[in-house]
Image (tube, rainbow over the protein chains, first blue to last red):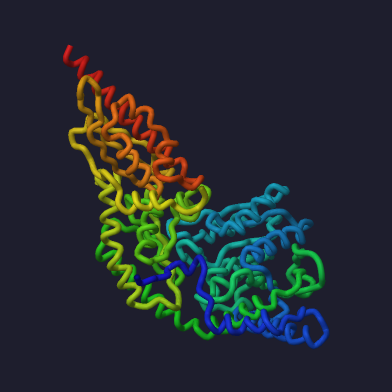
Length: 387
Length: 136
């Protein structure tokens, strides 16, 4: 049976070159990167090299602005709590959005328990924030604006250039969770008034368990993981050398392969066209244009998401859904709900997120397999016959 | 049971039993709502056999996940051939047992199936009452 992986926003397959780059650091080059002897020095060199590679991809001004972490979640926690703590004297107000990843939302909620005020900006039906609303929300006590570069569920790209400009004008730090944007969109942080940025290895064909945070020179931030003097005293812990090397290699490949995104976008659009030509009552979730090139989130009205993805899984196809049944908490997607999508369509949402390995044949396979599944499930649905 | 669906659940999900409607049903149960992500509609046909009210046919339509579809499917199997009184005793635990277990987070689907059945039987009694009143 053909296997088609369309869940790249959840995680990606590590590239062969990345794995190869990492292996020596699990085998023979095992020294602690902080050791000054001959066992440690090559590890240190590799970490430095990886830092340069990530600096290149991000378009940061200096490699000193790149700090390695255990992943996007840690970077988000670090950015938000670290800045809130550092700027306590200035204020206690943070602005974020209703559609952020839970790493951002829960970090903000924890700060609220400690007395911080948080504004959760709403979004429109496409998942975009309103710039005027952002401007109005900023007060003399605002210390941080944290808004994701692109949303993981629907792919909508936020107006980060505008947000950065406003943040700079008003003297407020701007953090962006760019976990989904890295490797898919071409940008340079140093030109964008971004003060902090989160990124993750496993979303860009690198290893899980490693990521980075970009901290612009001069940004006030209190370290969260305490211990030794690693990462310029900003994040303690013996370096995960192999993981960091993998992240660096993945970053250099991502920089090289950004042009390939247009091919992925074409495949994605081809998939959407194929699905909608053969199936009725489909609703596109996310901005029609300002969206990640690989992401396609659609609702199959009158149906529930888990039953659709189980059927697709039986045919070898991997996707995900915003339905309550798969969330682990019985809550439907907070992103789709914030976008104002009705409960039925929210439950019936399916996210296809393409990757570098996908081909036209994969898309044709999915286009062929879906219609009978949808037909069978709709025949079973009490909502469909009311139509 | 955590995480994965049992083989029995997957069997019922792949090939659900008794999907459809009964146009001249004697009782219809409607439970659930789209906000929760589960809606079940259960149809029953009841005939008087040897002085007892027996459920001779049951069909369902469900908007819901794998667990919801399989609990609907199996409950139709469990009630066919039972008297209405016996069917009232079919609990959500019986549904879970018949399916070989459900992940903890999906147990509510078995509760919904039990509620759908009870709702269908209640509807049957209401209709019966109305017919009795009408014929007096």
